[in-house]
Image 1 (cartoon, rainbow, N blue to C red):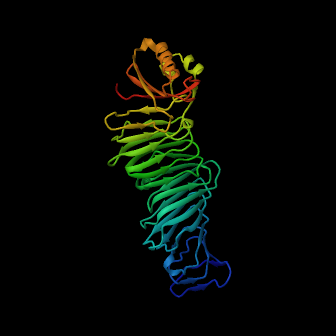
Image 2: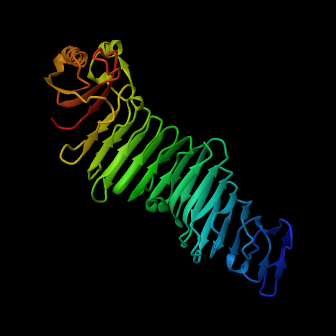
Image 3: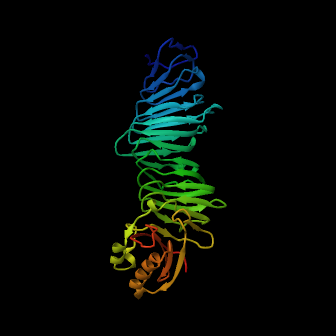
Length: 361
């Protein structure tokens, strides 16, 4: 380890030689001039500027050991590993090298900030801190992958520019502030996702497991596909320019009611987010619900409309229709559509899935 405690100048030349070597910068000391060879790790104790133009290709790791801003200028190391303590700010400025497509960040504290004018493409953030961990994106990246099986929050003005988010390695995700404005791909966490996004044309959003709350603000053009995945999900299309295909991929992805539980429902308000998927502001002119993967035969029955006083008839006739061999039953209750799906697929419904939606009748 070489400890640098004085300002580096053009006359400074450091050579780590053989082995694995650390260039340790004291707080306020920059590595922006001079020449540095054969140091694999750069360590900072406070605010510093690191200009990769003065380093050879040996650098693979930067350790940021203080809640301070570290400028990483002219990054030319693809997949650089940056370990960052709580509230460290990683500012990527200058011009990233042509081969730089990703930076790996180990987030050791509850917060890390990614910033910069240089486009480094993607960041893979591995979270090690127990509890909730916030990633503040101010610039520098358009793709974000989150690992570590922690609860993650993504925020910051730069989050609006994210086009690809993969949170499949997180335990839960909140991404509602500074919502992405043209998200092309999204993979949800293994738990609850609470997200607000605008989707790009042809985008696919797969929320994965968990009882997810998905707020779609619109589609930039064309259509986009939204998959809720396992869990009891809610889809809010209120602010959407629509053109959404809700793809219900599997019966196992949806909440199940036994026929006894369905019959025991006292009124329509008992069909809520605890026992049924929720769809708000569905537009029949532009939106689609894809259910072809739910059943084997896809025999669909469309029942008559029911008034508020006919809730018992509504339940009875849905079950009768499923028991008669229909796989999917659509019924209108007091101006709201309900889709019932036979879970058992055996003409004797022992349990069913319900999908209420406020699309107009």
